[in-house]
Image (tube, rainbow, N blue to C red; front, side):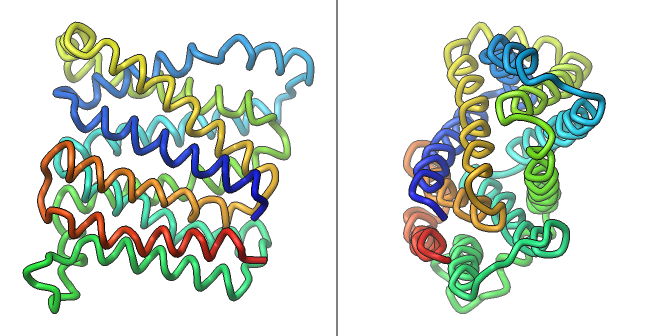
Length: 290
């Protein structure tokens, strides 16, 4: 992975964990996420239209973009449900970790990417860190505990979210051959906004008004962070393999676990923070992998 790609990925991970923290802190999760999605979609719509006009955009590119929009929108629905059911420091690592496990395999099978032995080691270290996050400190010997988490409603939803993360990551890597990062990101943000706001308006119309009144600035911040987080990833994908970029993003798990434990007072104390350091080590290994 290039140094530029690593910097982009680290920036993306910080932005991603930050807007997930703001989402988890909200009262009406879907209403907050839908509102932030609208802000994100409007943030760079001008540059996206300009780039599309200059580069041109054909039917095939639009088709790729529409699939991207749908995947990101459904992902938003699943993510909001996960945070309604579970902790940030649990749902965030599981959803990102599942995506991590699937993406390199999918990249090798579907995109013909070569994954080096050093990269496999780094990915394995990240996966081990994700798993360790869910072993309770008072029952360290119970190594099957994380598997039971996945059998709970929050865990199953996080698992679904992880599959969606892997799906849109692999699809978007392929779509970059047809669509520029700025335009593809706009498709993603627009789909995210349309699907989540439609669902929020149907399920909790009062929640949208309540979130804007009580957390308006948090919504704006989250919207900008959502837009920036994925744009940085798409730029990184232009310079490196998705099998490397996607696992490296999981350093955001460290940020997410820390925010959940320190600022939201979630369970397991600092155990989740310390366990997440294995993820950092894995990212370092992955960053130097050939």
